Image (tube, rainbow, N blue to C red; front, side):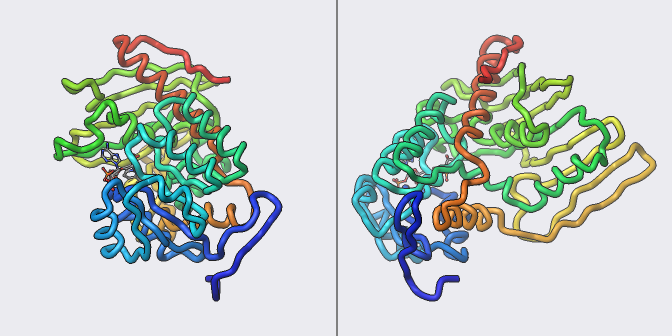
Amino acid sequence: MFASHARICQPHWGCVSAPLGWAILGTANIGRAAVIPAIHGSSNGEVIAIASRDVDRAREFATANGIANAHGTYEALLDDDRIDAVYIPLPNSLHREWTIRLAQAGKHVLCEKPLGLTAAECDEMAAAGQAAGVVCMEAFMYRFHPRIDRVLDLITKGVVGELRSIYSAFTFKLTKPDNIRWVPELGGGALMDVGCYCVNVSRTMVGSEPIEVQAVATWTDRGVDEQLAGTLRFDGGITAQIDCSLSMERREVFHVAGADGHLEIANAFLPGTGDVTIEEYHGRAESVRHPVAGADEYRLMVEHFGDCVLTGAPVRYPLAEAAGNMRTIESLYRSARNGGAPEMVNNR
Ligand SMILES: NC(=O)c1ccc[n+]([C@@H]2O[C@H](COP(=O)([O-])OP(=O)(O)OC[C@H]3O[C@@H](n4cnc5c(N)ncnc54)[C@H](OP(=O)(O)O)[C@@H]3O)[C@@H](O)[C@H]2O)c1
């Protein structure tokens, strides 16, 4: 914890406050429920401003969430010199514009998943961040939970043998008809909202990009995917199956299977802060339970981001990684719109 407010300067991007001064763009649920409390509880940051399209909403949100300053426009953040970093939990269709505008104004940006609507958008955002010399990262919080590194460690140690297949599911029932996830113009859809985790964890576990994908989807009248199932084919014959939906009972799980055993990870993306486990199975004969101490993945994410801004260290997940995720998502959508036909992933 920083004893008092100081300015920390380093060669990469000049001076920032310590603790880092954060602003939040929009009065989103996820900000209120998870990320603002995580920054409030973090060792290296504090939330000093909220911006909303509506000044009354901004003021009410500021009071309810312990934030000192409320802005009635998003633009106001661009000129607020007290702000070092901005967290963007806007609808997906606004991620690109606001990441670029904030980066160009010299703000470090933590932007919600999925980073953009397309890989090309992600590339533009990465280029803007680089040109402005600021840190930009996609807010995929699940991979900051220590259990993910533990799973990767078990794979590397060979506990499942030669890696063969991944299965992942993220589903929930979205009951509100006016939610942003149902709106095509805002970047809605099951794959964009929760399937993006399945794609991300599949790529992370395999450690490479898929070559080819196939998908089938159920579409709403407005044309967003309410449900989507897909298969990803990686080099060496490794496959990943993904299952995502906005209209099924809550389910979050992934399995990592090899020739000699498999791992099962329950409550995979939102494990809460309590202790968790990794279940290791070898046929019917043997099972091992690996306990992992509880952690706040949101807090670990914002602290990592803050450390990188304060020290100049590189972020663990650069925006090129986010572009990779979007290339797979775009290919899955092409396949789903084309009756499930195989689609190559446009990897570079
Ligand atoms: N990492 C996670 O755990 C997690 C969880 C949930 C969501 N997310 C991501 O976070 C983002 C926000 O999701 P959410 O469910 O929290 O959103 P939400 O509650 O619907 O809030 C979105 C905010 O964006 C602003 N906004 C600007 N233009 C808008 C428009 N045309 N329609 C609606 N809102 C608009 C609004 O703030 P003002 O009106 O105050 O300007 C609104 O409060 C999405 O990218 C989503 O994928 C991440």
